[in-house]
Length: 386
Ligand code: GDD
Image 1: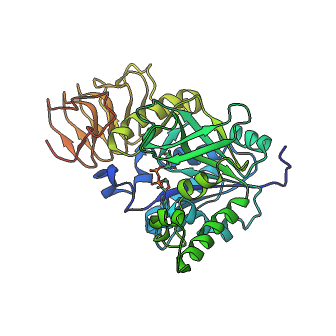
Image 2: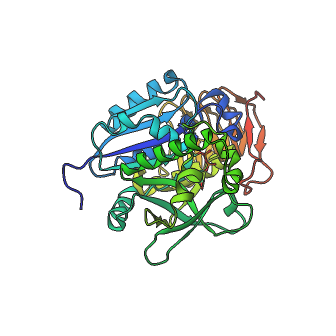
């Protein structure tokens, strides 16, 4: 059980401009973590979920984007949620665990009993309080959120084997070439502060090995790892793999939705998932379907208060309309994200597409992707002017 004095902090890894390249061209204009999904910056969804963690003291975003890119967002979300949110900039990439270790003094300043660590580019309902309860029961150093996926897609993620009864993590392989398991790592973790010693051990071992004149055949196999900088530590390969089966790591399986957001096409799917979730969490954010003088709304739709949508337009399902968008008479929008300052002119149709900032879609235009159900790379990102 948690005591009232125990503090918990959350850390969200946001990466930097050299990561997330599959998200281009959308991430050329805005950092990927600030790209809107269901009308909110991507990182807003995990941040809002953190608010539900009991005794949450602070949320840190760690990345290597310029501080000015996050300054405005961080100050407004701190005020809105009434939880301090701070952006910490790495001078260079340190890896998913190295970044956490780099800021260990700040993260542990308030002596937290637990540290949540979240990848920014995952979409789920973040069952964080439930994970914390399970983690306390297991009594290990860390608990990972895991999910079953199709056997064909599992190799894009960390595959793992867990004890069906104790839930201990028994085996972990990052993106293996041959199939290990359809149970995968969701990129959401809770740790005790012991995680910092585990990361330090990896750095120290690497330093020692780098200075060894001769190395064993096992170490020879790890030549690639030897060449990594000592302060670059990957959570998956360097911590989860070696600590599996040592009664330190446990798993918490989610039966709810989970997706990774690597491509523009995935952002469309994840925007729809978050819109659907709003029905249960923040229904007031969804456009109402009952207006007689408003546009016709079908299914889950978000419309920014500053957007102007003509009463004869038909919008939805799964549409997100950003600030200062104008949608003219007779326009039809289905499964799309319309970014700031776009103009959709009379009778235009937009389906399964992302319309880029300040674009204009001409009268009677039709913008549509050919394979709407594909989650691959075939999303249409429109940056032009019809
Ligand atoms: N600040 C910072 N610094 N963040 C980083 C760095 C770094 O040096 N390197 C990665 N990240 C962030 C990314 O932005 C992302 O949010 C998260 O850490 C993980 O990124 P990757 O290390 O590139 O791994 P991945 O996304 O391909 O796969 C990881 O996540 C999957 C779930 O989405 C792995 O942990 C997989 O096992 C897992 O299935």
